[in-house]
Length: 351
Ligand SMILES: Nc1ncnc2c1ncn2[C@@H]1O[C@H](COP(=O)(O)OP(=O)(O)OP(=O)(O)O)[C@@H](O)[C@H]1O
Image 1: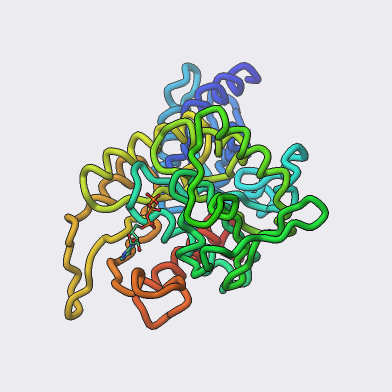
Image 2: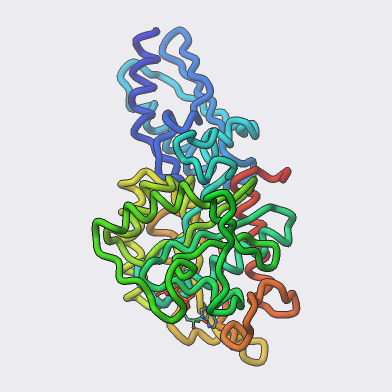
């Protein structure tokens, strides 16, 4: 029977959590496999959250996989929910010692997009502000070396620079969010030109010299696309999850698909998709300026949740502060709901 149990565990390594894109065994989601006389099997699966929308699908895939093992006559799948500690193993785990600069950060999350200009930085600043409003200590690392515009979106003056104390860079703070950007390292108005090999080195050095202090979330705004720069950032910061940003246009959707594949290869779980500029609200109606349903289609295809549909909001460009601060705007409310969803996804419903 021990042999049959081994075979069952082996086949369960082929069943993936559709959201996290990793197999159930390595995620620690297979809590128990009981084999009794005559090949009757009971598998207990621990889901990341009780309200997991994909629980039926996961249970069915487990049932089918186990039933395909020779010697199994009957399969029962019982669903339970992970403890906060078990969840933290997936999404958090103890910070790695070698990452000196990010020692005190609980969750490093990356924000990525397949191409530039889809609103990745806008999503990053608003999410960070919304998390801070929700009581979490949040920070942003603007790792978009080629277009570091986070300081601009947060209303920093071009000449503002962080202090260096005892050889450590102290991130600047705005709206309760700690911020470090490559823009702070360049002389005002003169962007650095980064050559390939320097990128990885600069990122590693930055990880060591920035003193973030205790943070719940560090959002890393990645350079767009699938080139060496986003790869280097992921290697250096080893995010626990990534949020993908897209617009409804088919082109952008094709780019983000490539991007998703890169994270699968890097074994960084995709927490979900944010569809930005999804519609313009006109007299109560949603007008799909850039096409309809691209985000939902892509989320379905990738098997990840569509975390938010952010409307086109002219105030995003007019204001020198994130719209998440203003609950009277629909976009502001959407960003707050996005923060709430992420917190639930990571800590469970009790957070
Ligand atoms: N929901 C929105 N409504 C209106 N304007 C938006 C919205 N989201 C982003 N924008 C605007 O679109 C432009 C691009 O946004 P942003 O800089 O966030 O994109 P990005 O993907 O980070 O770009 P890149 O990485 O290429 O610098 C900005 O001018 C921003 O103000």
